[in-house]
Image (tube, rainbow, N blue to C red; front, side, top):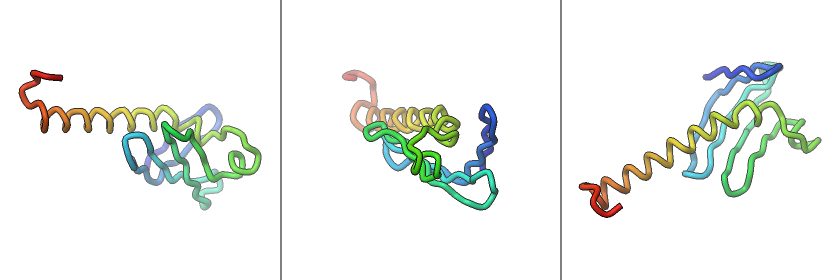
Length: 97
């Protein structure tokens, strides 16, 4: 479990999952301490959250703004890992890339 501070709220991340090199999802705890929301960042399809602020009112919620930098870091890390694995497999001497 990770806690991230935003401007006015504290965001508690219960879990994160890098599903592919372009998609990462989080399960976050609401401010009431009971309700859980699913927040998804996708490079191809944008971001979404299942909280009422985002879903019903079509606003960018603090879950999305609070996790945007963390999601980008996870996606960048995943891309670097895939690039390193590719280079190790297809160009171990570093001659052709």
